[in-house]
Figure 1 (cartoon, rainbow, N blue to C red):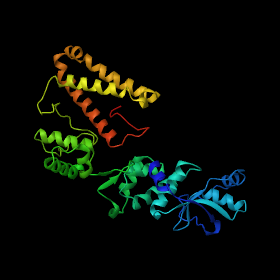
Figure 2 (cartoon, rainbow, N blue to C red):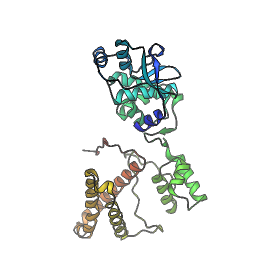
Figure 3 (cartoon, rainbow, N blue to C red):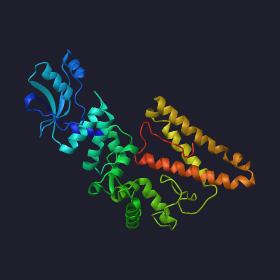
Figure 4 (cartoon, rainbow, N blue to C red):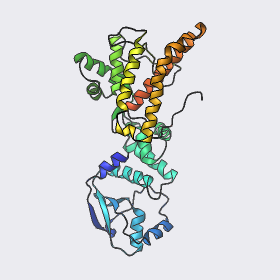
Length: 337
């Protein structure tokens, strides 16, 4: 969301405007201004940062308290950054800027703003709107379900990264399979862009086509909607292989060795933690033969099922990473914990 706001304000000129020409209507702050905060700003010895104004309507997007402080000091003019976008986008900017810094909006203000944004930006994902108003994605999801403005709903959602994603991936999978048939050598990303799905989805479609399966998997009842169907491990030529994990282990070690050369990972604490975490998983694969040899015969099915679930979890994680759904502080929960 910060990237969208930054791009929206890039190139907006800073000019001096007459205070009497500005409007403070349509503010997301329904509870009004904080008088003590205005007095503190008025007593500030240095020049205050410029406010943000929607130039077509001359409405203040961000900086009402600074505007009131300028009036209290007897100023007739104020410096302002002029935004030329739509009224709807101007409101989103106003909510985000009043949530990200300064005197924060109340929860009621943020909730009412979310309801309004759901009507004007229904094509935005729950996470994207949540980032704009400072609420949880689950709260936005609940508000969307209760919305009676059905005409504003869309089959496409735009995420926080700006990418368009269909709510129902079946159509995207069908189109991806058609594109792969027409051009088998096309890259995953090229097909993903045309089909409106993620590269990971295109890769899964390609694997299913090679195996002779339908590109759209049948829904699995009784499972979480985030779960992915576990499929047998196959080689690139489509044949099953008992020892294919050894080839994968070699490839993983090679990939990890390359990552260890990346300065962004080597010279940061979080990067080193990530490398150590991945290293533990790669090195652990060398112990598989000894561990599997000790599995009692009556537990082989249970261990095999555990391995498939573990693989499905990693596949789900990979999809989330490629789709940009992992945030810096994700709220991840393990079912049954």
